[in-house]
Each structure stands twice: as structure tokens, then as C-alpha cells.
Image 1 (spheres, one colour):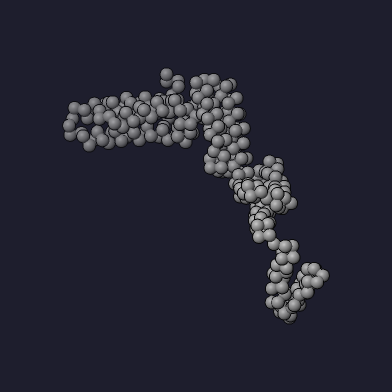
Image 2 (tube, one colour):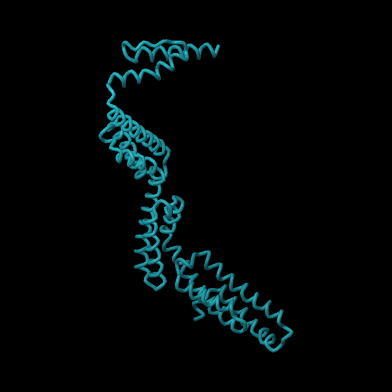
Length: 306
């Protein structure tokens, strides 16, 4: 059994043995009550070192059975009144923690790529944006850890690779959702409003942009600068499609003529032209008024910069 115990654990157990004589003295000496408390603290102090080492290697995740057995003994020691009982329970706890630590250290090597993929998924906020994928990956890793703890290393390795793939998928899904969810939501709203019927070109433009952005994420999930711009443009075109759809539906309901629509479209141009002292003429369409406005604004800017 001692061959299974790590050097640090052996030191702790040696301390427990050394303290046994001191405990025996305290047990027959009522005046040693305060010393008893100190002895209990000392026993826990060294047991806590082994516990922290196991926690740092994520023993609770990679060796759940041994770690939980250790915690059960640790809790019993904490609740015990007899120092001899405390010592015995902590000895058992340290043995279990040491066993869990050895398994966890092995798991950190065996599941190295899986742990990296898991950390990347966490950074991508997969727990929030890809919860189902994340849950599947966590279950697979837990299964891999159980296999390793039970001695089935080959099976554990295979499950670890499967978990890695699931974490990568969770990461990818989370990045897509974070980057494109606004555009996706607006496209759905536009489709629900029948924008495909009333503003098909604008809707298709929005759809093509978000699809291109998704393809770019598939190719390079960490380079998102262009993806962000495409997502913004897609969201804009989706809102544009919604606006156009609302306007077309409104015009149909009001039964307005094409002449009414064209005359109304002249109003904003007339307003802008008026600000710079122009009186636009629309007898040949919008081209000349727009040119005149641009010329007028350019002249004003030149005058201002003198």
C-alpha cells in the first residue's frame, strides 16, 4: 500500500504518527484541551496541503471517485471530537487524495489537448452560447475520466479525443452565435414579415452577407474583424428589408398612387437643397438636384476652409 503513496503524503502520514504520542498524552490530561485544538489544527494543516495539490490538478474532475472518498473521510475528521479519530480519518483522506492526485496528473497529460479545447470553449463563452454542445462535451470528458480512474487507459484516450472534438464544436458554435445572433434574429423577423415577397432583393443581400460571415468563421474562427463588419452590414440590410416591407404593406393598404409615392420621395431632397439656398427642379428626375446639392456643399466647405 505504501508504494501507492506519494512522498508528500508519506511526510504527512509520518507527522500523524509522530503526533500520536502527543495525542495520547492529551487524552489523559484535561489541562491539554487547548493543546488538543492546536494538534487538530496541525493535523488538518498538513492534510490540507495534499488536498490543495489534488485540487490544483483538478482531481475532482479527473479522479472523482477517489477525490470524493477522500472528502468523505476529510468531513468525518472535521466533525470528530476524538483526536485519535481525527488522525485515522485524515490518514485515510490523505491516501485517497494522493490516489486522486496521481490519476489527475496522468489525466492532465493524457487529456492535454482536450483540456486546451475546453479552455478555448470557455473563453468563447460556450457555456452561454452553445450550452447543448458544452453539456455533451462535459459528459464525454467525465466518462473519459471515469474510464481512466478505473484503469481503462485506452478507452479513456479514445473518449478524451471525442470530448476534444465536442469542445471544439462548442467553441465554434459559440463564436458563430456571438458574432451573428443579431443578424440571424433580424433575418428571422424579416422572413416572418414576408420580406421575401415585398423586399426580396434586400433580404437576399442580408442573407448572403451573414452566410459569408459564417463561412469565414468556419475557415478561421479567431480572425473576426471582417466577420464583425459583415454581420453589421447583414443586420442593417435585414432592418432595411423590414422597413421596406412595412412601407410596401402600408402603401397597399392606403391604396396610394405611384405619383403620390414619387412626389413624397422628392420632399427630403427639397428640404436639404433649401438649407443651402437651392430650389431643386425634378422635371428630369433626381440626378440634377443631387449634383447641385453636392456642388453647393463642396463650395461651402471650400469657403469655410479658406
